[in-house]
Image (cartoon, rainbow, N blue to C red):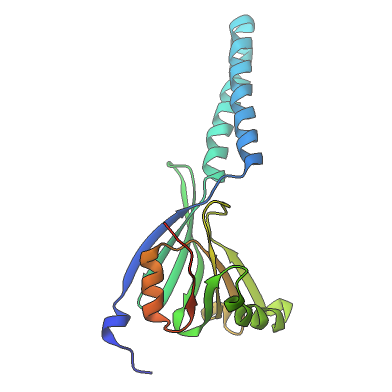
Length: 190
């Protein structure tokens, strides 16, 4: 298939910061409260409380890095690479999370709309061992997301891939150019 050079040269990059779940926020606040309690007790008992105070502070710092997750969408022509970023600033974790060949897209549409039925039917028809789902949206109810269904490529060849995306209007514009007639999202995105 001959590729249009103008279309194949489209590049775009976007970062989506995942919302931290309330339970994780509560755990983080409790860890900081423990640091304060151990520090206060350290004023009465001296250096005996230094180790629990510093240990809890270090763990709270580490835990904050682990629960802070963002996804980076990188569009290079017909290749959509999604990376998962987490960890602390001193030790960041940057891992390849998902890859989609946009020439193999079935449909891209808002969740719970009639347009998504074609992709959902292909996903449901596939064997359980040959389908995979990636959650790369902010997972925030105030921010709309859409679903991308595609035939897998690379290590997921033969699979049906479902990815929940949090695209901007610019990314949707690029996807409409790359996948004409397959993008049906109408969300008022950021």
